[in-house]
Length: 341
Image 1 (cartoon, helix red, strand yellow):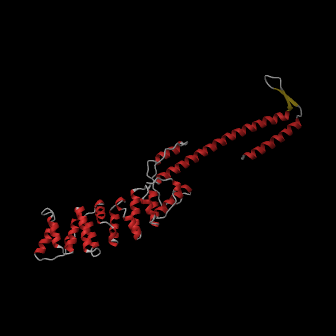
Image 2 (tube, rainbow, N blue to C red):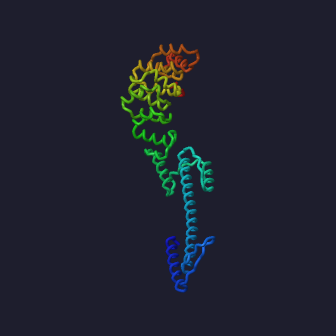
Image 3 (cartoon, rainbow, N blue to C red):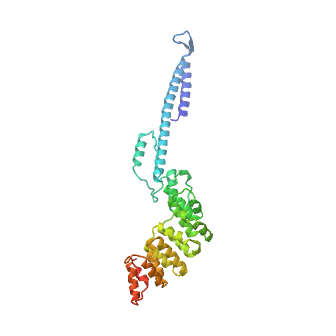
């Protein structure tokens, strides 16, 4: 029964009861307060209705205390539930889990149990109809599908994978954002991604600006390979020394250098082709076979022999074999010797 109905019923009941008793007994009763001489004289009907009214007030106090207890319990339950949802969000987004105090022991125990698991969103799952969780799933799904999402409300750290992926999406959508990323305090992974996207999409003037800063930029093998492609487009704009240092710094092996030698053949002038690979070979022994490849392709046998003499005898047996064939008037393309190089 609702409180207002109970109060209305009690008021009507007391009124009818008071009138009925008054009709039966209209006399008054005098009550003397204990320990003093004050007395109160009221009709008997009023005394009886007053006692019933006092009982009504006491029942109201009882109901109010029960209601307040239920409200407090509901508040703590909802608050604990929200804390648990926030923890699930943190775990799903690979955030550090904060220490929280739970009023309900069951929620506290469940929190500790969940902390022992790695939580990963199942994107093919049905909606939970919890706005907080379902919004997280939608945002997660959008970011993983390449969309740019506003993630400010999650307050994620810069090194969070979710934030990094979202920034990658932003750079893909507009590579010019990458220029800011390169000069901000961002992760190495993100800077390399931005650098690569700029290399793939920037125009000629932007290439000049970017490549002039190459020694200070984050490099890895895929990035350097993109730089080599640009070099073949604009060879006059990249310094050979910086290029050879970049190749060595990311661990180019003999096959990487040989592939670049093949790719650059016919694009670079013979002089520039020679200077580039001599620079690479002088800086990194892994490029030695590539410089021999250049010499042999250009039929510069004397230059190849001169360089070969600078090495310890027997160090490059493949080159020895090639020279022996040449001396025996056996002409084979040097490329067939490099199939397994």
